[in-house]
Length: 238
Ligand code: PXP
Image (cartoon, rainbow, N blue to C red; front, top):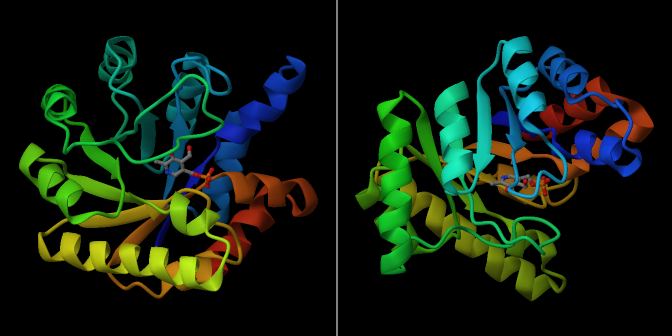
């Protein structure tokens, strides 16, 4: 199983003090050295962590593919068209949220049109487009119709589930959705809120081919270092 490491929270630490360190470029290179398959970063509309400059330098520095998480806001799409990440993952975005709160809704007619337009312009520039969606059959069908190259299931609800029955229910949703998406021919990724414990059940879902993980790895790196934190996760998911 592939691992994409999201480096946003290296920039969160930097922004907490307005310093020049820690540098996401150095973090990305260490993740690559540790064996991750891609580097992921989210250029948020409020630029609360990653900035344009980080994306430019990270993309130049790494050899693995760069996956830019992004909203379909015009300025952000234009920036992606300019820097041409190997992949872009479209996510919904609300200013006040602590982190991405759910998948992008492609079932709603209005959203469908807007997302479809963004997918087409990005694909025309050779960028593979992934849609971050909730593990739901209707969303998957619409993602297929839109022509997304890949999909990433939002594991946020599973990660936040507290009781055993809730965890079981949310895990089942991810399992069923992964099977359905794979049968439709999708490359299936998953992510959000995954850590060194809850990832173990997700790894058993054979249809999932890639995990995108950020917060837990960056937090772990504070204690053991970036390379060890990525290696520990790779050990769990391989
Ligand atoms: N995948 C997507 C689409 C996300 O929006 C995020 C959070 O930026 C992640 C994966 C990583 O989530 P976490 O930081 O909780 O591991």
